[in-house]
Amino acid sequence: MNDAISSGSIVIAPLDPSSALPATIAALQFSLWGRSTGYSSANDYERLLRRADGTSALPAVLVAWRDGRFIGSINLLAHEMTTRPHLSPWLAQLLVLEEARRQGVGRALIEAASVRATALGYKRLHLYTSGTLPAFYQSLGWRPIETTDYLGKLRTVMAFDLSTEAS
Image 1 (cartoon, rainbow, N blue to C red):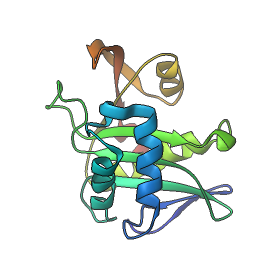
Image 2: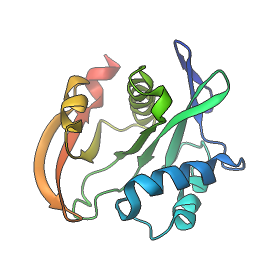
Image 3: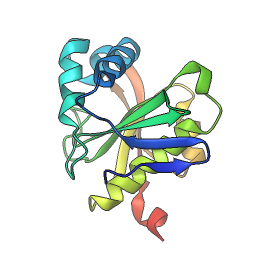
């Protein structure tokens, strides 16, 4: 899936690992999530992003653009929550720049990641989140499967059945 997906004025495409964007995304995501990314520094995390080369394997990073400007990204990872190694794949690090929030960018990124996961043959996606975000994901069809303490914070683990989206 190297082709871009359009959702209104939003264009979503795989990350170009040879561009400067992996460093930008790594810095932004690491500043927000730090060690919950699974890496000890933004530079180490950038190496993960650069491995996402748009092939048919994970990790995958999808990037949202509007009018040629980067406005957000999302990751698909084989493993995310170290205490739940049996769950795979994971939707992770949904990032929408402040000026692009509440404009459907997050929804478009999640939908594009779901399409990508379906194309890779997966039947279900997982994520973990906290605070008020479980309600956002539930509004998109995700369902909570458990609440657990992870990395010192109460997290909601959620699942999304991809077979419902494919029909």
